[in-house]
Image 1 (cartoon, protein in one colour):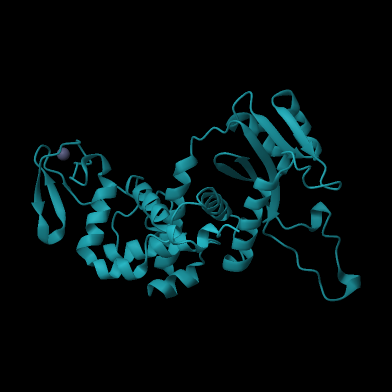
Image 2 (tube, rainbow, N blue to C red):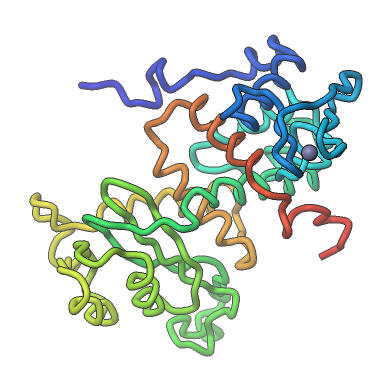
Length: 320
Ligand SMILES: [Zn+2]
């Protein structure tokens, strides 16, 4: 039997040991190479794009020879005004990608030995950066669609006579949301947070190329998509797969990862941040066969080329 990818040596190309042994200068070099990939790590002015610069080595800053702007390797990126060292940030990303079922902020803060607030904001910034990969993605070929409810569970009371019918609308929490996922069998997974699964119909029309093949369960609202896409419907009360591609196993595999992430790591998720966890699980699922070093450098490169976060920069200062 073939060895599971996560157990193989190829999946381990980056380790905490290696990051800390390499030290701050080496980590800084990695940041430069990923920020300025097209110039092999040579600084480019973020204001005017000029390559000529003076170095201010003591502060790891540069001054543009053309416009005079001062900048650093993290200027204007999601890591702008960073407080952690380059080694700690790189180690943080290594831990983050190693968590194949996600990473709670409590565990993150303990592993990194930083305040909870620092770990919370850092992990959300990383999730924002990785979500950018699929921002404009349009799916094609064979695409599976499905939805699943998360959050806002109403606990049953102890005494039977006090219990409410949790299936009826008035007894459901207003914090409950449905995660709608579209997964291209040979490509990416896109996720959306809505109140009703039926809202996935419009999403599919917007994010699936005409001529694609759709795989969905028997829920009535997906009928509307049969006019737009060649559709295969799966009746799960009969079987889960016919052995000939008639299934929604890939989108279900995504939901089981998200479910394990929510239950096993976060325990409770606010509907406000559910989109972040949904995207994080999709990213992990889509890159499950890439090495941890490959995943870490993809996140770091993405974060360094992602603008300052509007939501997470100064999050605790705003007291939101
Ligand atoms: Zn400049």
